[in-house]
Length: 360
Image 1 (tube, helix red, strand yellow):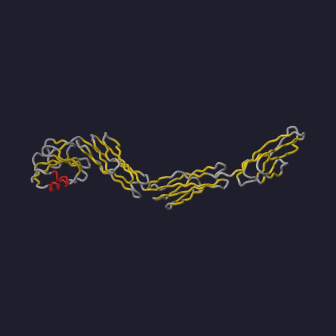
Image 2: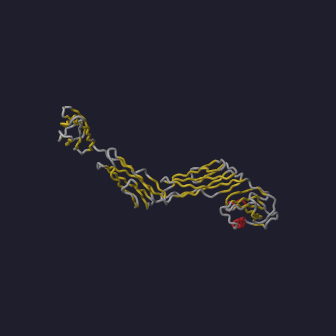
Image 3: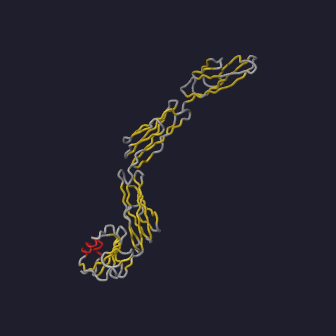
């Protein structure tokens, strides 16, 4: 028998039997243990009072009607109760717009049973809780912030224990890997300008990785702006992953298409005409001369070149520029009199070509 202090009284029910007669007497005695008071020691059931912490050995001796005897011992242990152990579960991270969470608590009691569970919110914004008297807590209506929830358990000895868990609710970061790009060999490198923001914190980490495509070299892969060198023909996909100060992450992808070098063919068509990809054709007869570069810029701008790739050739078919639209760049390109050919790759993948004749 085990008693948990401060319990200090116990009644022990003994018995005796005799196959060829009857039990004539019962006698209880203390064989070992601290002081205690015994009552009804001459009956099958003895009562012990005034027990203290420790171990007692009690002996019951029975005598039959022929004087035969037999004894049996029982041990009574009085000990301090052991408190239960509460476990509110691991800390959790929740990314909005998800605003509900289930917290699974547990508890153990080495010398008894758990008789009650109770959840309380200790800190954080207002929330809605259900299941507060069970091991499983359901929380809803969460907003950005850090919440602390406490699970308190009580055992059958009246002892209690508690444990806390944190729920961090955060806005996920936003990430943009930049615009898809198309370039032509022999161009050997390109830069992607990524960006990220975090509504309720800060961006702590940038990481670029190649997701698919031929082998290239990534430069500045832990910054917002990635430079890719060693370009090879094909389709490359790059992934930008960012992490915020709450360890939440977000990912975006960008595509780089690397094509064979553009070629100029026989002059066959005139004006701004949609043509086959990777070719450039214009009429042999020059256009009326344009006398200043600003007029050229106005003409090209009218073609809606935002986010388009523009390539410029001189009249011998040599490519003198290939890149995204920049008015400052074009002012530096048209430096000599003569015929210039241009090719424009639009966002919808169409290719337009035209010509401008310059006389200063």
